[in-house]
Image 1 (cartoon, one colour):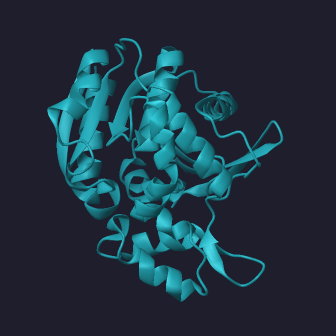
Image 2 (image 1 turned 120 degrees about the vertical axis):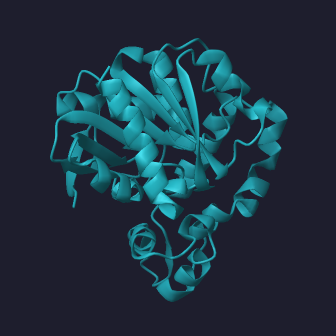
Length: 280
């Protein structure tokens, strides 16, 4: 089991889970509205060989939730502070969905930090035209995983909705624990996600405004392509093939949250890639 740690960074508390049985450094970044516990299965699987850190990124989980400061630059500053705190010069860095785009931008700015880069079904890697901003309210309503941000009269009502979401397909004990730890009861007795709306809004604006890949990278990179994920066409894969010069693409079973719904093949694929890198 991991231990929970808290790091004070410039008036912000960054909470993270730590698997510390081994020495090889690995940081795992969750996607939008998730938190570090989503990497629990992977952390347990890799613990004999890797020192894995899974932060709750600002605005999520147990970390601080300031009124503003949710651009990529803010998250990269947090992650740089985390690595400095850990005493890590570099690490394997994995990101899912929006967290994968964050990882790609971080790699572009600080490639020396990356032993390898693992992108798990990235979300909106390119920047979007300005007119797309008009669809933000629509996106909030149609993206099912954001429905956990609604207000629920009871925890049971929230859980009933969660059981129908793709990331909780099968409703395993781990999935139930992940959902439960991502929710909180508000002062008025209602329930909602710990992920906050100011973070959602600012993150979406930055995702649309900033391109994730803008120059060639020679970092050893694994692209995880779930069979029922977001990236299914050659057109969607083109930016990665264009900019990532040391790219390996692996298809795994499952949907966008393959690490939650089909963890065994996902974990095995990650481990095989990491071992190849570390064994040279």
